[in-house]
Length: 435
Length: 141
Image 1 (spheres, rainbow over the protein chains, first blue to last red):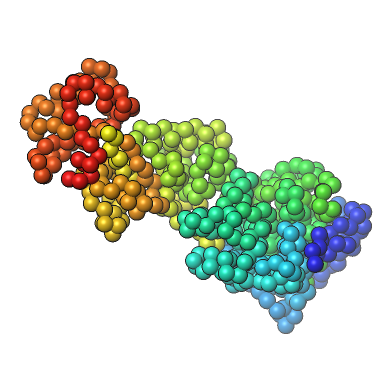
Image 2 (tube, one colour):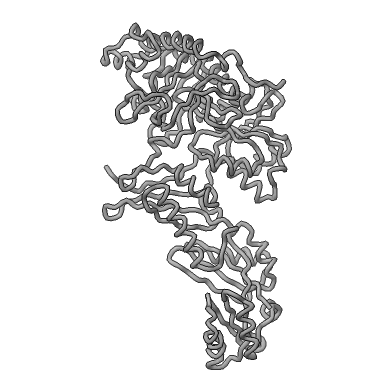
């Protein structure tokens, strides 16, 4: 049976009713942390705020922020809010930006998380008649577990492929007629490319949709994946700290992700001052869980820079939409004093007809920052004249300068020489030692 | 009369050239001429093979292509190549690059020329009695 929503009464709840539900849940969540997470209670006490002070949703701004370093400092049990005997699962962050964070889940937490993922699959057109091909990594990473759980809840046939072994991915996709692909956008592009090199075009698979997340990507990359695989590509957002993928997901409009506001409360703040910004402003996304048991978090600073938009959506969902993050403030490079996001570089490359396979190297030579972008020369752009290759590089440098405001070095390299990622793509190497 | 030259974009790193040669060897392609142009950042390998299409098919996945070039057959004696290039100079025909070699069978020398417009250069050379090499001449060395 095709459904438009997984949980219609929640996903389309009128705003006023949603506000009431959020406030009620928020009060409980604050009390839960006050009673069971000593380090957060200490922070609240230091800020002079008690659970009784939370009388409206706006009062949340009185609560102290949490950051990744707070979670690391309390590794491994500091934020655990229930007895371990009530927990049934852990997941963990990749540790790409430092020490891992471990998140705990009760049965209820897993249930809530899987609901969020099931909503995302339904929003991408999924139902129990679909074959959901999950190529996110399984294990500590939340990608595989989240979409696997959501897909099973929905009753779809779930293929727990995990990442890697591209040959097998393509074979199963063909033999079992996968209809929905879930993985990182860079792996989706890689799968598409691999299929193309085997002579398999967009009509040679049964895929209709993809749910891609866990790393920053761009609208241009979406177009590329859509045409390579012949699908509609949907964005999904989440963090292990808050549960995993499914905190927010895209609907058929493909214009921003609905945040599951019955479970998460979103704010946008000025990353420098911590001040809450009015709706529609660009700033750092701050999330609070509203009904988590084992690992509740209040005012968690995601480091993701984006914008929230609450307009009527043609899909019928009332949840606020977040624009795809421009990048994490962690990913942001400061080069010669200019803020550079890898996603800006990707945008230029795709516009100029290059594949989204690139490597960014930053270094400091004689006290000046250098930015080198290595990108693959697509076979169809080949010329036998060195001068023409140089012209291509010069043209790319000029386009990059227009986008970034600084002049990078560009190095074209032969096709398929930049390593492909099967999980989160590593695209930046920063050689600067600034400590 | 154009000769089909194979050109390949290469990274500046040890083993790039031998990798391509191994691919061509495995495909059973015979090479008759080969040159590598380098810049500080990358190289372009250019070669004449006995079967250009087969060579190109073997190089799928590389940034490689077929370039139409012309070739002249000249006597292997001093001044002969200069005479031919003077003809082109006199008509303001630019050379992008060239490479020359002596064929082992009949002792003739060949010079492969990359010019902006093959037809213009061919007309100039033929008008002046220069023997252009046919594709078969070069593929079958």
